[in-house]
Image (cartoon, rainbow, N blue to C red; front, top):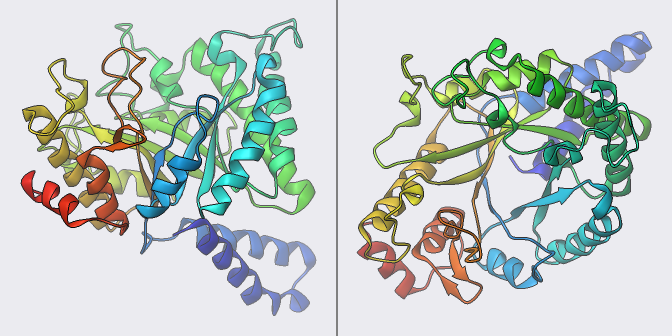
Amino acid sequence: MTTSAMRRSDRKARRRLSLLRGALPQYAAGMLIVLAATAEFASGPCLALEWGVNGGSPKRMDLAPVFQIMKERGLTRDRIGVNLTKDTEGIEAPMLRHVLAEAKSYNITLYPLFGFPFRWGDRTDAGNYPAGDRDALYKQGFNRTYSFVDQFKHDITTWELENEINLTARGPDDKKLYGSGATAQEFESPIMEDWAAVLHGASDAIDKINKDNGLQMHKELNTTSTMLGFLDFMASRGVNFDKISYHYYEVLGQNPHRNWNGRNPPFDLFKKLASYGRHIDFNEVNCAEIYKPNYGNKPGDPLTEQCLKSINNTLTYIRDQKDAAIDSVSIYEMLDEPDKAPPENRFGLMYDIKRAKIELYLLSRFAGGALSPDEEGALASSGL
């Protein structure tokens, strides 16, 4: 279900309830409106997926050529990073305003992802809150978010509250919680309590803007791998979120209906996500083969060919599942970043803005975008 479709659903819910307002006390009518809108937002799997990408940094390049390719390929959403730090205060809002105008001209929706000062170890927000305690972290999240989101409250519908914070948690063995992290208790640690303060402030800020302006902007919280207890932990600490973003990187042969779960029995990823009663964006998807040292990043390379089949299987599983209300799938990422060290240099759907990989043709097929006979032939040559 697209964002515009969700808006239409909310309007339908309100119209259905308008007939009841005269017969109910004011508080009861208001409660019914809230409950109906929530039910519309959290119900069932969606019939149509949006397809998109993590599209690149507007600080390093003009995104108009990227948006042109996206439009041709049927891709309608772009996840874009926004850092809310003191040294970017004068940069990020004008940048987002410019990119918003460009994106709209190509019928592309932007989904901003926040980076807070605490990500880089700044507890005081450049000295604004010298105590550096959890109250300071809450204020950092609230004030940074409020001042930024308020500028775009009529243009952006969904804001993502940081990225892969679950990976900063550690188990008793001081390792990341891969194969565990299914419970809120596993996230009870000082670093997670600190992050909860930041994200609580951020979610409260968006809630206040919504309340003060009669809006319904959504707050999205991200997790990865088996670490779904992160969502429960943050909710228990007052972090309000309407949507879940989930990152999925897997090797060929793995089935998300029997998802790897460490030493525990496999679980159905889609049923587990559905149990939260929220809509979901798979907003970072790629193959896991790409992490292997001998990944060749070119047609005919064995691991690259295996990666293509892995992505095809993953997108097929997500498209065909019937349990979770998945709104979108976005590949990480649009372009290779050759200035980075492996494997971060090779996640692109394209080598550069003029040279596509077969991965782009594959995503275009799922998204209903344009494919030439040669591109169809390249997919067939890879067994797709």
